[in-house]
Length: 150
Length: 440
Image 1 (tube, each protein chain N blue to C red):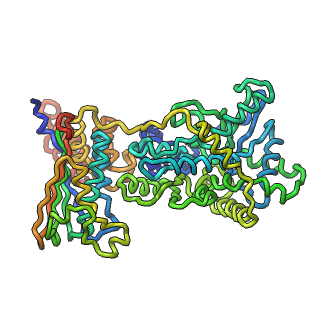
Image 2 (image 1 turned 90 degrees about the vertical axis):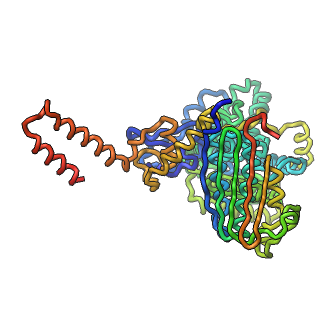
Image 3 (image 1 turned 90 degrees about the horizontal axis):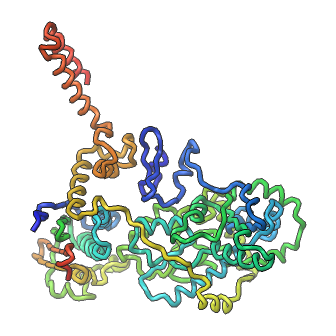
């Protein structure tokens, strides 16, 4: 029963919608931070995939978004809030292969409809909520202490 | 300072007027050697004198050596020229390269794991993966690079032929870059190299030119027909794929671009690519810092030679059935295993590491973020990390100097204002201290 929960690192990353040239930068920075802290490499792989998909969702579908990285000895957490069109039907968006991406995005290799399902698959805990016309928020959690592992 | 800035893994610090390389971070790419205007960083290649330690010596020139000459002087002539320089024999590495190309093809065919596979031809790339991309370590092809394989076989064959011990046969790689020299002294997979040393192409180029004049003229066509086209591919970026006619390949060169592509692999966004040829030097081994010819010219020379062979439909390659047989006997595989060499985290204790990472961010926020390098670290963020790790002090940043100056002058003025020390000229000292502040 240590007071370790007081130990906390958090950082905010701003993501601009439509900015494909710097897309991926946020997830690369996050990966570097996780490595410096010495997070287990199998968790880093899962977390990198999830943060990249989350970042790309903002780049592709929203105006702007903020990803908040939060690390404590117990868990690693990404909270993402974006301003944009939101998601009409979350159930549908969570299905593999479903996508509202434009042809141009598909041309670039995006929009395979794997983003959200991929985040869910890699995270230990995943929550999504959305208000159509306003935006979407994601809560992605990875357990760090060995006992809490799924 | 230049070396510090070009280092792709931020492994150099300049402190006390001297550049120091942090070994853990260094991938031996040699960028600093090329960048240093004073020649202060010297690659470790072997002098010619090393040859006398062995009873029989064999030179194994990198195909990048052939690229120095192109179509004008063919490999056969180059090899006989090298023999005149004091080696007992010269071995055509292109043939071994060809075998290894086929072996890679076999490996690609039967491999089922995550893709793309990464060529291990460039030792700097292997080290980069070990240090920066440990997650990708199993995607490095575990087949001996041609230079090692050739040295292994040369030693075996020659010791049989000449009734000598293997250690009496000296195998010397003629290298286009310092990295391969280091890979002989400290192999990435922790085993022992089969090569006994390396001599830089630039050191041997001059003597070789004069030796070439006196070699006898053979038939050009015949010499052409002896060239293994697959082997020439190893001198240039993209050459392995081109000569094997592999699809779904990617050729990348230059560390900055490799970092970008490897980031994409890690994110899983690089789809439909089976195999990556990556070289830390631009354009591949022809761009090595120990070559003589301009990189674009030698690239062009080797390309023209490959095109000529393609046009003439000359292959002179190893028998693929023979290669498959050897492949199944595990002839091509490396002895050891590539192990990751991830950087030490800020602390081995997770809670402490998180705290230190937070401190690092706070320090970074207080810094000017212009990466001036005056503190001796390449960027403000690396400086912040050095401070957290206890390897630098905040005051090393010149932007913290005015603050430190202020503190010192305050201390000083307090000192001279102390009545027990200087009671008589209180008003004077106040003036000076004010003046001092105004100047700042």
